[in-house]
Length: 114
Length: 208
Image (cartoon, one colour):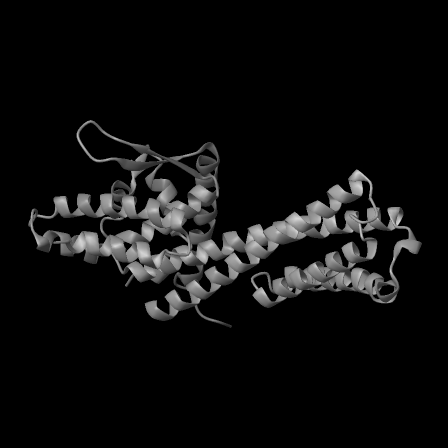
């Protein structure tokens, strides 16, 4: 079973990935995360805001208020160039990490200990 | 009558009182989010839709606790940068005072104590600062000791040189003014860090 605790440390990268397709506001970001994880990451929606703020402070995201013609004023977040590079780095690191965990957790082949 | 969303946003704003600018910005953002979520609920428009949107958002206290942890990190960084600049400026000002200082100008009661306090309080502040940098970066006690040491050193240095009475040159006066301004800024940051640390501890306790 997946718990929110298991996501800690990965949430920032997941938020960066959710913004890769283009700028979005907080509600749209959490909806994208839910859709992309097929509902597995059903986090309390508010948890995304500390991550957005942290990433913006680190210069990986930028944000601005926009008012679409049809609706309310919204703060929209976009990946910065540094954020795009950071996402690439985090993807590579995750690839290495998940491969190592798969190997460590996988069944032992070719018999037991001598 | 206020609804669940208004109540939630007002509560969150209170929890984030350690950073009024953040509280104001986040209140607008969260309200926007909650209204979107409520409007997407099949029961919209109804109080039930608002209540469910608030439930899905999570406890305001837990979200505020996360912001408070980040705020402590940022404030600690600001405080350390100010401390480092204050140490450098204090050292330069000390050297300028020593070069300019006329030993004959030192009044008798200060002649013995002031140079010792000036030098050793600075060295003590520097030593505590270096140890705290490596071991306890968010230690309020260590930062308060550094601040106290620098205040003592600067105070003794200024009394020792009696700058204004003795008509010190402009570069000595400027460096002394810089020291005083930086000590003020450092005190402000240390107090701010203390406030944020206390708020974080309280929010974490309440969120558990």
